[in-house]
Length: 249
Length: 265
Image 1 (cartoon, rainbow over the protein chains, first blue to last red):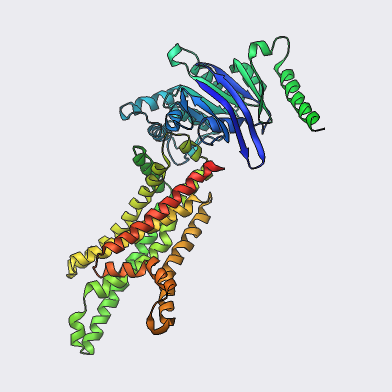
Image 2 (tube, rainbow over the protein chains, first blue to last red):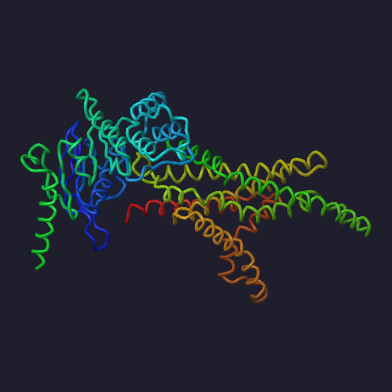
């Protein structure tokens, strides 16, 4: 569903992402793990077509993000770090607007909105103005806009940041639900986080990003054999730092 | 271009949910109403004066179009110069400030659809403003007999000026994430455009025997003042229409470039 080939991103002299490649299959839930500033957001922005890569490319559901950008973007649902909400709109008309932007056919607009409202638990607030909603509800509206057109690929940038424990559990439950079910309906989910417990809770595979490089790509099961994820994380990131320092010395 | 109306519709609705639309509409109605009223009074006073002075040949030439609507439309023009930046300041700056441009750029829409959709919303709002002026003008038809085609040409001229200003305002909004900066940048650009005709006049006056230098004729070409006056006089010339079309197209193209440039960084 997602195939990244040698993605790199430069900001002037700063190399934010260096030669990152990976593949994600249908129905997989993959966690992008890494310290803050590791390049997780940049990779996600490239995959969603928000930023162009300086080098390399990626295929989303078989569409090249550069040569066939429109089709690739149609196949992605994206929840950025701050949900892209219009505070003056009500939830239902906002979702309807997003659905129109994402090319949901007119006849199916109402169904698409209803389904997203239902799945994200927004039934009670769907007539409320977004600006008056609590942070937890806003995050859910953010998630609802990402899934409203039922995309095969979901990219979620820190979907649970700033939520309370109960809300976190709900969002995680929802993500797990999206990736389960019948083969054809399963969605591929890539989410970023720096919360290790989150990865353990919902992901089956981890891609560890550090200093803009992919330093680890393994299933959670093989990773945590006899070792806690926290230790793996510390070992790998510190190891990478030491290697970098050693290289300079 | 399917998304064009979705984008324009959302933009218009959010203008009318926020106070911006109402502030601009109220200000515009009050100011233009006041100006219309004083224009009528001034026209009346002029007629009385001309009668007292017994200038009969002037009295025969005096008419509603040239002596009431012309000056009235010219001040409305100045009012638009201050108010249209208020309408357009949020167009793109707001999306950046709210983080909603991430939604727009990751959706399967083209940049032109985005720019034209936004512009369409601003243009519709300008049309509402001109509608208010048309209502006021319409009252003259109840009590007098202005020339209909000439009046329409004048309103059309105001509309063209408003549409050009909206394009310039859209550009100002596309280069910043701060609405206030967008407002003042638009104001400065419009003011420069407006001043050009005055500078061109000064240049012509300073030139030898009234022959215009290249620079001042360029400035005269760029300035909208003369063209607007032609329209108010009822002279619809293709060259003037082309000028406004050129102005709108140029600034929309600049806007598109500015919006796109987010992806270069």
